[in-house]
Structure formats: structure tokens, C-alpha cells
Length: 165
Figure (spheres, rainbow, N blue to C red):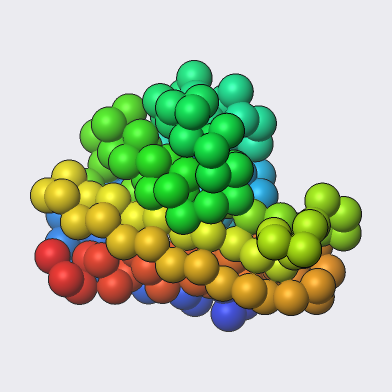
């Protein structure tokens, strides 16, 4: 189902989390649960992956993760502010030590001049208060490629956060 490179990365992330005794969560919009699927593709992942949230709609972001509607209205669902709020909400709504969020415009439609196809915001939150955000401009490289690159970036962020402690 997933490319070998992605499975290798997923296995390394799950192994790292297990070795450190930490749990992970994912809050996904434009990837629609693919990160959760990729992480749970690894046997024994239940020892490290706590849960995933697929929050494709704005209402889901509000109801499942507690993202305030005003933030979405003011900044848009595809924004740094919403990505951070999604990650913080995933920490609050789970028993995870680290949560990553992904919200973006995968395409082929839906892009604007300010938020073009391929724009993806990531948030990361931890139980100990670490908050990170990143933005990637993958370009109009096709829906599948935007989502694939988003999975790789999200795993990198989780791995870096675990390394930081």
C-alpha cells in the first residue's frame, strides 16, 4: 500500500517512540488519515501510536480537537494558527506525548493566490509544552504527491520532537 521508503521511515519512528516510551497522535486534514494508516502499518505500533483524528471539515476540527471557530474564520483552515491549535487539541484529546497536525491544499482545486495548491501547514505539540510549526510549499505537483510529501514531513517533525525530548 505504501512505498518502501515511507514504511522504513514509519518503522524507524515507531521504534524510536517505543524505545523512548512515548506515545504519538496525528490530527489530519488534507491527508485524510494516511499518516495514521502508515504508522499503524507497522506491527507493534500500538505500543507507540495512541490515536489519529481525521478532521477534514472545519466542524470536525472544532468538535474533535476544540479548534475555536473564530481562529478558523480569522485565519482559514489552512494556516499556522489552525495547525498549532489542531496539534494542541490532539494532545488534549488523547494520551499522547507528541501530536502532529497536517492541514493544507492538496489540489487539484481549492487553491487561491494566497493559499495555492501544495501549501501545507504542520503543527506539533507535546505534553511538556513544546510547540512547533512549519509550512511547506510543495507546489502543484498533484494531489497524491502533496499528500506523500506531507506524510514524510510529519514523520520528520515527530522524530525531531522525540529527539528533543
